[in-house]
Length: 239
Image 1 (tube, rainbow, N blue to C red):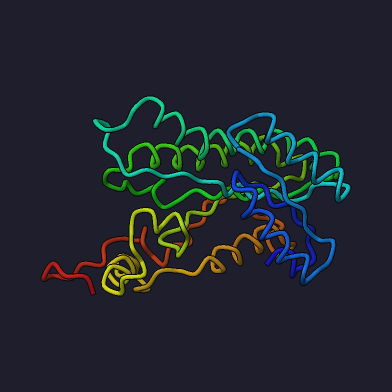
Image 2 (cartoon, one colour):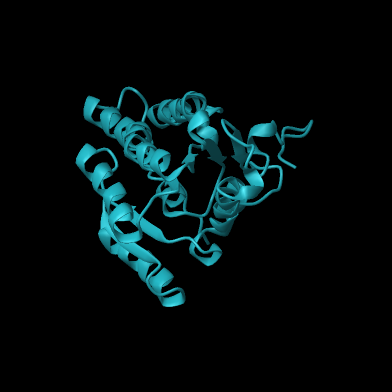
């Protein structure tokens, strides 16, 4: 979606095959508009390298989407120290590291936009998900703090809170190919459905566009109304 709007894109993912496939999709439509790099966002050297690829290949960096995520369905009894560290490292530390290298490049370019992908789990707790919830909540407040630090650098920093989106991460915990389970998850939203990834991408694109030139430090749910409140009726059923 960003490439279709004219952006040149670096896909940075720990899954290099996936990153390369995405870059190839972009290049088929817009030749020379995308490159790929293997990147573990929890690793300082990898985060630095991703920024360097953007600078060396395309001559600058104006936009960063911090979208790497990792989840696990465990209670505190089942969670090891290594489990907790990994969830926090990818979801929260990754935002810190990628932003750490992107912000100086954006400052040199005269400004830029960062979109951090948190989750409604950052504002509404999810059972057996405490480490993920904690990390996603941290992203929200990091977004606010960074927006204050770098607003005068003309760098806008905002945060999206997705609800149930039809992505591989959702399928880790829910078999959304099962119509009954898919309907059950969809009914947790006011709109009564699971979202398509493009519905998060379009909001990300807006936040990075001139149309959002006075928007920074914003925490924006893209959740179909999941965080607005309960959809239970008086009989205890969802409606």
